[in-house]
Image (tube, rainbow, N blue to C red; front, top):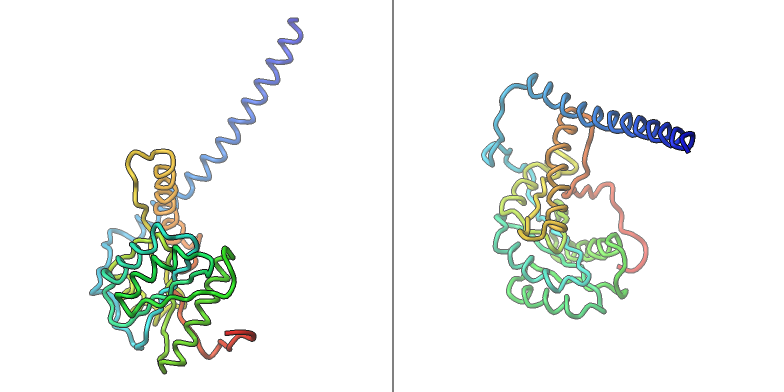
Length: 245
């Protein structure tokens, strides 16, 4: 019996030592990000966030297209579209909503808002849903190309939003200004915390908080880059896809 207990004791000690080394390595990894950020802050010195007046004036006019793919979003699509057209502070934009023929409830909810504002365009695909978001965005792209040809207008950039997003009033002005200088532009995304839902909303907010705190440190230090939510349209490099439009 004593020999068995001795073997178990050795196994436990080895397992604890192995776990301690793993936790130490993980802690050092997180600490390096913080150290890099603090050294960068000391090197850069105090700074303030720029305001809208610091943005350059857009050098090229053009319409912005907001793509919103929506499958089974009847609970949120109406409120999202209503808030978007009420909040957006921009003179020239269109919202293209990607819908599916077998999702009548979402179509009706979006149509009620579109009937009040001509800037909202409903695009119903040919295939029943759900498909993929990429497939829905491709359908919206074809619709945008047709709208540009019909209106004789050139769309300057595409902005991507989800059906549950709460838009910022000034985001289109930021995109319009910065897209002249960058191929893609990314804006921060903040969570809306639902009090009383610690398991779901709290976990979601924790993930956003980690991204909001860690990613700017990595980006500022040149260690990480993010993809964008608004992309410039370079017509010289784009050709009309083959197949149905």
